[in-house]
Image 1 (cartoon, rainbow, N blue to C red):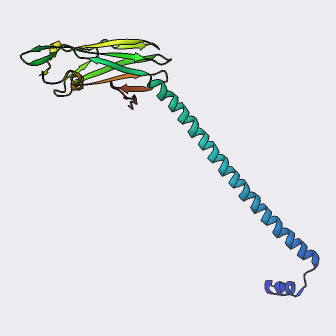
Image 2: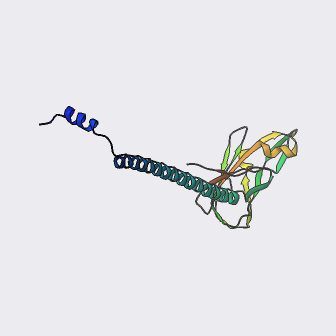
Image 3: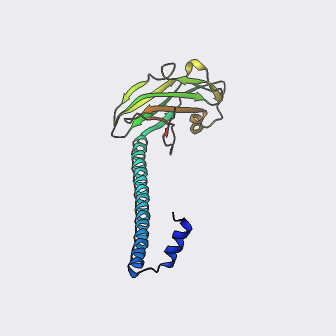
Length: 197
């Protein structure tokens, strides 16, 4: 029986033929080519994955921007706050605002809360406030009115008329056609914001 050491010694003593060298070089080149092809394929897959992720992100951003554009067409404007003046004080009788849907889709489930900033008194839809709107169609504008006479809210007459509306905070909420809940406040430049539950 021949030992491994003897076999190695016999093989080392034999000279390599040109065919052996050609075969060895071809094997090395094939191995390098295989590794190169695998690396090239891996890079291609990584680029394809990155391109798909970018496209998904872009589509999601476009969809979100479309939703935001629809929500921006819902506007609260022309708040009015009639009051009676007695003994040097404004007694507020009501608060009204125009709520307009200037978009191309209806909105649903319109609710809102009017809060007196100083006393934190909240007047909600259906309880001193307007009846909740189930649907506000595209292009519709509704005047919403809160009855304040029963709450005896008063402020000194020195407050300038254009600052009276700032005594109250109004937040309206609605649901768009995509099922997203939005919140909007009156005022120039006020953009609706998403309501997360």
